[in-house]
Amino acid sequence: MSIEAISPTGITPFAADVAAADRVSAAQFSGMQASGVQASGLDFASMIGDGLSRVDQSLRAADGQIRSLAAGENIPLHDVMISMERARMDLMLVVEVRNRLVEAYQELTRMQL
Image 1 (tube, rainbow, N blue to C red):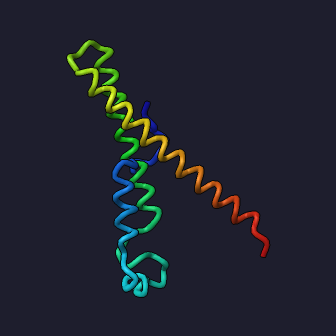
Image 2: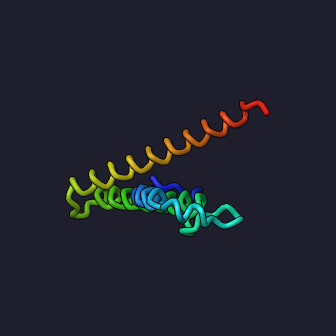
Image 3: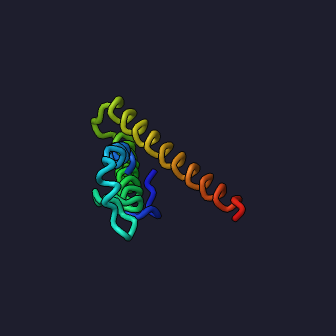
């Protein structure tokens, strides 16, 4: 259940990063740098990278717990199920974000100049 092709960068705390970016005040927006990076230092690429890292970690944790349970180790089944569900929800969020990004890109390519 691991995603090794994704750079080592998970989505569960990704929502906290997005919330932090939303809290940037109008005063901070007026002080944006010429490069386009927000004054708070958060940029889109690093937020996505951190989110993907957290998703990869949750998938690896769920995979490890499943393997341990299958090997006969004494792990509570409910902990394994919670870990699997958390990983599934994280992956669903990543897929939805990807779908939205693709949709936005397609909308941009359909625009007439």
